[in-house]
Length: 328
Image 1 (cartoon, helix red, strand yellow):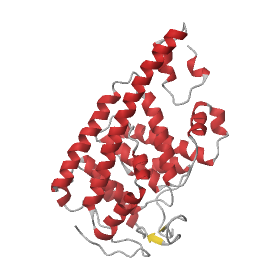
Image 2: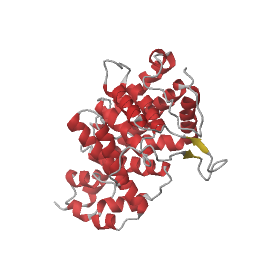
Image 3: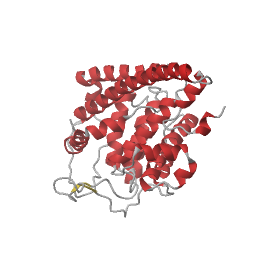
C-alpha cells in the first residue's frame, strides 16, 4: 500500500502513475476473486450464444446501462419514455433532456464499440469520441484554467463541500492519460490480468477526471469497451451501472480509499465483485428471456394462425415494439 500526499482542496497533481504496486498481482484474495469473476464473465459469453438473436439482449442491456449510468449523474427518465423514443424517431426528436442524455450514452457506447473493432485498441481518440458523443460537444481535455472540483451532493451530509480536486496544469492531465492508456494497451511492460487492469483503470480515469463534465459516464463505457477489446466479453452487455448505484456508498468509499490511502486491494475486490455479480444477473436474464420466448411462441401459435418463430423473435428483438417492426 502506497500513501500519497492528498489535500482535497488542491489539485491532486501527485496522483501516482500506473501501474500500482505489484502486490496486487500476487495477493491471494484478489487472485481468488479474479478466478470467480473471470468464470462468471466467461459464462455470459457462452450464454449469449444461446440467443437466436443476441440483439434482443444487447438492445435491452445497452438501454438499461445507459439509463442507470445517467441516473448516477442524477439524470432521470422512465423506461417507457426511453423505449418509445428508441422505437419512434419522431418521439426521439420530441424527447426531453433526460431521454436525450440517455440515448446519447447508448450511442456513445456503440460508437466506441465500433471504433474499437476497427482500431483494435483503446486510444485517446476513442476516449475523446465517446466523451463528445455523450456530451454532444466538440470539446477535448479540460484546459489548465478550468477550475474543476468534485463536491458533495445536495442530499448528502455537508452538501457542497469539496471532496476532491483533480490534477490540473499544463500537460499534466495529458501525461496522466497517456500513462493510463499505455498501462491498458502495453501487455509486455504491464502484464497484469486485463480484468484487474479494468478495475485499476476505472479508478485512475475517475481520479484524472480529464473532462469538465461527463467523466463518470465516459469511464463506465471505457470499462465495457476494454473488456471487449481484451476478449473477455464478446458484446458490451454487462450492466455494471446497476451494481454501482445499488452499492453507491461502497463505490465512493473505496474510490476515496485509493486516493487517500493507496488502498487498491479493497477497490479491486469491490470491482471484481461487481463484475461477478453482474455476470450472474445477466445469465439469469438470458435464461428468463429464453423461457419467456418459448412460452410466448407456444401461446402465439395456439391462438394466431400466422404466428411463427420469426414473428416471435422479431417481438423479442426490441424492448419496445411497434407494428412497423412486424411487417414481413
